Amino acid sequence: MLGRTQFGGSVLVRQQIISDDCRVPHESFESSMRPTAMTFTHSFFEFVMPQWCTGNVVDQKIWSPGLFTITVATDEVAPFLPGQFLQLGVFPDGHDGDEDALINRPYSVASPHGSELEFFIVTVPDGELTPRLEKLVAGSTLQVSKKAAGSFTLKKSPEKKHLWLLATGTGLAPYIAMLRTEEPWERFEKIVLVHGVRLASDLAYTEELKAYETSKPGRFSLVQSLTREDSDDALRGRIPELLSSGQLESTASCEINAEDSSVYLCGNPAMLDSMEEALGQRDMKKHRSKSPGNIVLERYW
Ligand SMILES: Cc1cc2nc3c(=O)[nH]c(=O)nc-3n(C[C@H](O)[C@H](O)[C@H](O)COP(=O)(O)OP(=O)(O)OC[C@H]3O[C@@H](n4cnc5c(N)ncnc54)[C@H](O)[C@@H]3O)c2cc1C
Ligand SMILES: NC(=O)c1ccc[n+]([C@@H]2O[C@H](COP(=O)([O-])OP(=O)(O)OC[C@H]3O[C@@H](n4cnc5c(N)ncnc54)[C@H](OP(=O)(O)O)[C@@H]3O)[C@@H](O)[C@H]2O)c1
Image (cartoon, rainbow, N blue to C red; front, side, top):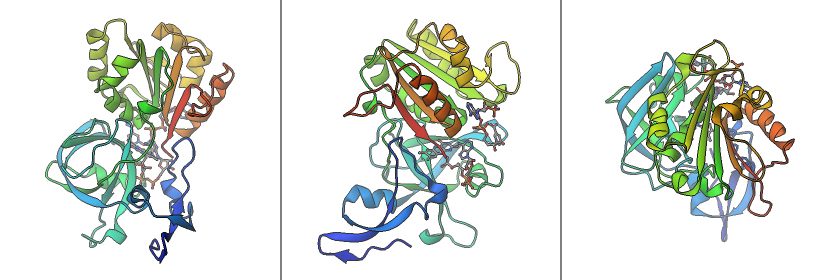
């Protein structure tokens, strides 16, 4: 339980360490928090001790066994930016309404702010929460944090000509939200979305993404890659290997370089590390307001 003892204008709380690349190490949530005296801010409490509302599941789409999108209706979530995440929570059996027992994790919202929010989720075998989320169907309820968090948004992007959105697995979610808004289309000449998964059946949102190739001719490329089977419609190999072999850029007809590219990376942390290293060899580094670069990251674990 988090402390809330007040000391004058400050409160004694626990602090979650969030790194520059937006890492939210929920798995070690307790161990990543340490007691510290901090000035009270509303947003800080909202993040560490979310206020919850009840969301109603209005739709569940199964892309393949264990890979699904749930659509959750709620009017209580405050406006947020595409790319931000919310906490989703489920009460374990016998603990309905007991917030101390709530099992919760962060999830990127796969849709812009609205009264219905999409979440694109993979079931982690033996995971604590995802097997429970998988069981939610239309009519089920779950807990949703009222306030989104995270800085994996287009506001973080340097001003460049080309936007590269690279994801493994469910790391696709924040990009679906971003692409459904006007901002990326207004700011970038060309957008390349790279989605790397194990099997063709793990490729989700393909129809929606391919529609951008038609509606935004010459301005959008979808590059899908599979690591565990061949397909005529996708590249074969992990994303960092496809960068070094040149296949990524030739398929997208676009070059990744420090001059022109804003590169977003989301999903498997090992992919993020390999890509950061590979991009570093091209003089590209994390973008920070005081130290401009090209790369913006979101680690899922
Ligand atoms: C900012 C942020 C946003 C996130 N957004 C999403 C999202 O949109 N969709 C989503 O499915 N997950 C997302 N995650 C991961 C999510 O928070 C949980 O970690 C995940 O759903 C596993 O929860 P669990 O309780 O079932 O597993 P746990 O018992 O907590 O096991 C965690 C382990 O599962 C594996 N794992 C976690 N997430 C994934 C994943 N997405 N793909 C593959 N393996 C994974 C890792 O090995 C991790 O160590 C996000 C994480 C962060 C930090
Ligand atoms: N349909 C589904 O996707 C599905 C369904 C049910 C359960 N699950 C479970 O969900 C968990 C997550 O599976 P997932 O496939 O979504 O996520 P994942 O394991 O992160 O794999 C997604 C993609 O990232 C690649 N990858 C892994 N390490 C990489 C690295 N160092 N550099 C670059 N790319 C890398 C993988 O390639 P490799 O193939 O080479 O590892 C794969 O193509 C697993 O436990 C899985 O069993 C998945």
